[in-house]
Length: 228
Ligand SMILES: O=C[C@H](O)[C@H](O)[C@H](O)COP(=O)(O)O
Image (cartoon, rainbow, N blue to C red; front, side):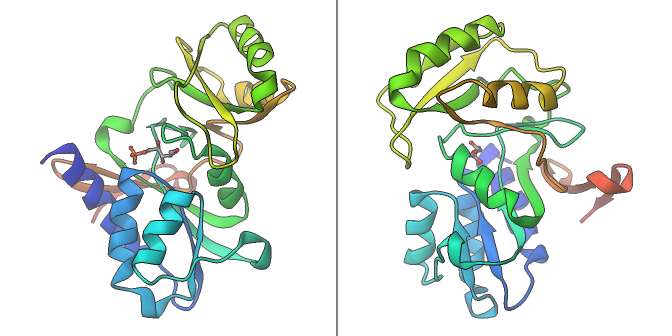
């Protein structure tokens, strides 16, 4: 199977987690696009979605799925999103598509985070994928210097502006042994909006697609594994 076929398999497995008559939290990226396309067939069973990016909102709307403003929503039972890397503790690097801030916001108010990935995303230690950091434009040089002090090689993402009108610095060369501490440390740098480490709010369920099928891993059940 190609990587895209694996992404689709993981995405479609997440449809089993849909709760009828609720609002679904929807992430961003090529894996999530398959989820949105699958969700279209179930749109009469849900009230609609809260989206983490303009791109996902447009795709949801094109399928006739209502997209709600998060501020009007009290409860999101389920958030479905991909990741650039995920480790054994279900901490993730996200933001390869630049949607990390809205993703982190929607994930923060969702009861359950289901991460959908092809098997290449599972790593022992986070950091091979450059860590995205969203920054206020006027603080870009300051934040880059601070990130270099933490041991990374910061590079401003070229020709890219986030949905929030900010810039992304991708930090290369990090070996992230303690994602919880690093996430909090980077957030303390003045000018940082969000960083792409999702440790404090990691995934609850991982749907990992490989050549043998989609493996479901649960963080809170001592890494129980079942084939589905
Ligand atoms: O900003 C983008 C998101 O964090 C994505 O979930 C992440 O980059 C994974 O994307 P993809 O599903 O395209 O590999």
